[in-house]
Length: 314
Ligand code: NAD
Ligand code: UDP
Image 1: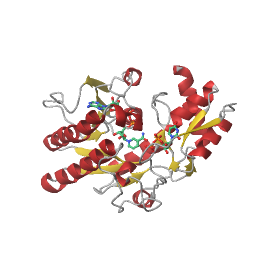
Image 2: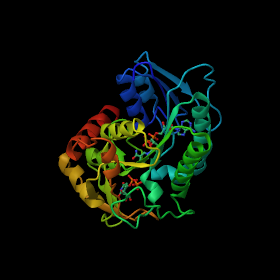
Image 3: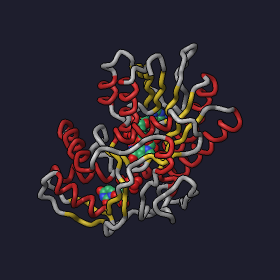
Image 4: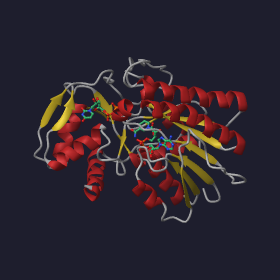
């Protein structure tokens, strides 16, 4: 990637900052954009140690910086809050960044003749009726439910991306990211892994929503970054599931976190949020048909590394 310039929208966030680091390590110049609505200044401070990193504080759905004659080879559209807690707090910001923000980035990709990658989500499948989920499944989304600001705006972002490809021949890629965790997540982000780890570390009860029989498949952040990179380097414009197919019930997840961290915490049960998907597991056969992708970080190691990171913050 030496000599290449990668623009990462959402650079102060958990997954996007891990991607920035990946491309800096590969010798690229990385330009980060973020308005810090859910990102952390500390992620930018870390990246700013590299002379190849440039940062602009910017709300991407209002405007983009003027890149003038700056060459840009890749644009990674990663800016969006992603925690269900945010769906209730900042729904309009979520809808605007995934629609107007994505539009601005696609226009920039067209202008710069850059390859564009949209960070979509397993949420486009909604509460899926097929299991595991394959890319040809068109989804089961409630358009007016508590998650719809995220699910529907990501579906819109996919449609917009495909439209720029068909209408203007912009070189696009789409990744559908499944539940990902790791260092650089906010400990108070509200998603299941940071909640369980921080609760276990403090000796508090782990809050399992519902009866805990719903499932998720968790991917460690560096494994996800490798998957995204493989799609970015492919020549296929259709969506790819990116994640780790190892599936756990939420109750099992809580029990494992307690065991891995040697915690004395117990489990307490709270009501299940509306429209909470019952089962989720990616079929990653399509990704594996274009690359030798295999997630390598074990759940136990990923949980320990994330807990170590949280210790430095708490
Ligand atoms: P994150 O909240 O840590 O990162 C998103 C970043 O985007 C934040 O730094 C935030 O401040 C920034 N941002 C939001 N709106 C912005 C705006 N208008 N202008 C500029 N910056 C803005 O979340 P994450 O978990 O790292 O997710 C990153 C991307 O991956 C998102 O697009 C998300 O939808 C997608 N994704 C993540 C997961 C996951 O499990 N982590 C799963 C599916 C999809
Ligand atoms: N969950 C839970 N306790 C928590 C946080 C989440 O039981 O403290 C459950 C949530 O109901 C869902 C799963 O864990 O079934 C994953 O939730 P998360 O918010 O991480 O992401 P989602 O996959 O729902 O977007």
